[in-house]
Amino acid sequence: MKSNRPTILLGALLSVLIWPASVAADFTHQPPGQLVSGSGSGRADNTVYVPNMRFPIEQAPAYANSQVYGRGGLHGGGGGQCDSQNYSYPWWDNYCETRTWDMPMCPSGSGHQGQDIRPATCENKKHWAVAAEDGRITNIGTYSVSLVANNGTLHRYLHMDPATLAVSVNQAVSKGQRMGLVSNAFGGSSTTIHLHYDIRQNVSGVGATYVPTYMSLVRSYQDLIGRPAEPCGTMAAEGGIIDDDHACFFLLGNVSTWRQVNNAGHGGGLRWTFAYDGAQPDGYARWELNMAQAGKYRVEVHMASQYAKSKLARYAVRSSAQQADVRLDQTSAEGWRTLGEYDFADGADQWVELYDNTGEPLSAKLELMVDALRLSRIVPPTPDPDPEPDPDPDPDPVDPNPDVEPDAGLGPDVEVPGLPDIDDRIIDEPSGEATTSESSSCACTSVTTGSPRLPIAPLLFFGLVVSAISWRSRRRR
Image 1 (cartoon, one colour):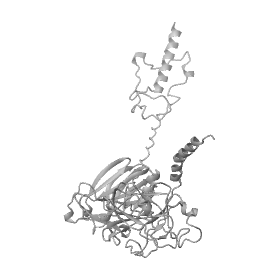
Image 2 (cartoon, rainbow, N blue to C red):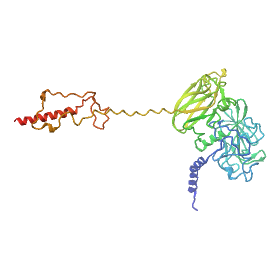
Image 3 (tube, rainbow, N blue to C red):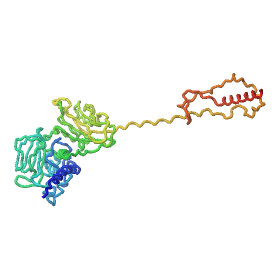
Image 4 (spheres, rainbow, N blue to C red):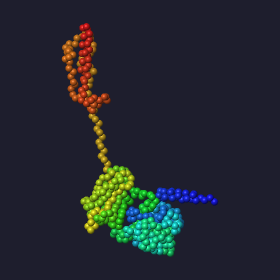
């Protein structure tokens, strides 16, 4: 029998080339905090708590949604866990979904600690879970594995098959390293085939707690499938405001250092941290800008004097592929403070950032605040239209009948009494200034500036005189 191996290899190659493009094109997700109806109250938090993490399942596609409120789940209605609805976009957040766990960052104070993720297919023990960051394995339970990253963040993986674990306690792991196969393991009982993934960090004012996981997963999945992040929003052509609860506002770096205040600032909320004198920022904030129209805009930040104590607040404005560094004394005034005027291109890859390393000592406990950002389009004044030039006054009219007798009075026998000799004639220039090409209103050949214009009436008179003299001369011959 003739082998069809080349055909199989070609098919596999085409699937590798075509499949990722389809996954990237189809991917959509619901906003953070929007849970399946009836499953609880979510937290609308756009913060990426772990920037640059690796998505915790090795290959796409993957589907973040609820395993309890999805098809085949305890509260999911009819159908089985392999229902196609569970393996389709869009993604759904299920952080804070109804549970009894103590969760101080959830609106109800309790809820689900992380995010449920289904692998590409409804197949048990086939799809690898991988390390989200470089770190060390600190604990392995009956159906859980804990990875503490080098930065102190705890990543927890639930429902990997214990028999397939490729890591051990105290083992150092690298970002992307295989850890175990996704399964339905649940400590002797079973659940749906999925990976429960959560993140635990130390949050100022709260302590060590499970933080919202969803947007870190969205960003890392977009990296996995090679699709740039969707614009968080569009800044209108006339400008607008991005507050600290907007989808285009992000806390980055060590986000646990920021405190949230809900009774001050623009819109009733703001964030603050302590300024310090480190060489690199520990935590920073970003307002991402996706401009609907290119143009010059005034950039302003909102200040609340109670929390604005840094005199060396350090900002960066990226516009039209250029970056400007700006220092602002946050203490100098309440309300909107300008960072300058900048030319923005249309589109994304533009932003304003605030860094906590102002150069002021941490021991001074100076509060550095971040709140709303405002852009206002600067419309250049419309120049006055060029005035229409005033037309020159009408030139002196030329009398078609100068004060001379008509030709009939200059017959061959008529003497012209008092006619001066030719050598004694003087042709006077007309009074007034000569017209120039600049001021002439006639549609005619221009005249060089300052050239005199010969008067027409004397020329006519001169012609008549010459004709009379010539005629008399001929008579005398």
